Image (cartoon, rainbow, N blue to C red):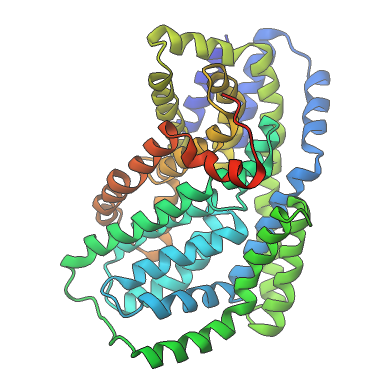
Length: 435
């Protein structure tokens, strides 16, 4: 019956039912078929949600909203623009690096796309950059916030899977940086045929130094945010939740008094947006905790492992099938929902075949990121199209280039070369893989 409930969940999501309601529908099917009592499930869900680790999610969301309206993202763009602004297609590199920097503070794909996209798209239009390729690039860039710490996806993964948040953060760094490099190279190649793109004269060395000093000085408060947050976390000074609170507190004076992008109205809008997003995530987390409990009681991970091993007993073939499943899930729902669904189902499966859970955290992040930009669903692709007013058909070919030469190579490396994910946890935290 558990497979029927899972099928109901997938059909509901294909039909466009909101994810929290799709989770709830699956819970009802399992409760009716299995005779489970809500008096047992509801307290369990409440107990699991009432944790300080989960509190970091709304705080990072709030920090991202305040940064977006406080012109902190503008400063991150400006300092990168010094080095690449004069190159043909250089704004694509600027956008990619700015998304990586912004993601290192907020850990949110949607916040990154909304903030950096609102800054970069007008600049790209003024320089005659094609709308389709640029919207496709920004959709993929936004996912860098899922991999480069602090990542909301990694926090949710560790909360559900009972793993080390710091180790999971580090597991996504190398895949995230490799994607940043590949996206920049791919788009420089794609944009070569667009001859109408405006380029600016390269400043002399003295001018570049002076420009860097000017913009660098202005960007110091913005650049200090990831230093304070990540330094505090890995230095053992702050927990992840405390670092998220510091990010919120830091962004307020910087946004109000240094960059003066925050106003009372903008602050109120940021709070409303954060509260709305947080409410959705908390409802999903509550429903998913009850659903994951039912999955465990129905032994869904064991059934999936039996099904996969009936196809092949080879570890690498099973990982390939797991990757396909996660890409499909990423196409159907947002990153948080995908993490909440995949972690309780697949983590026991991959651990049973000898995959380290922190290694799987990186695999999960790359897979869900790929799913978010893979048609036909591709939620981030459509969000980028709406923000930039770009035709979807013009985004498909650039997205295919990014998938074939960016996403898929990094996914294969992350999946089949464990040290891509585990090198930094072992180096910095003396993490001992469980394989």
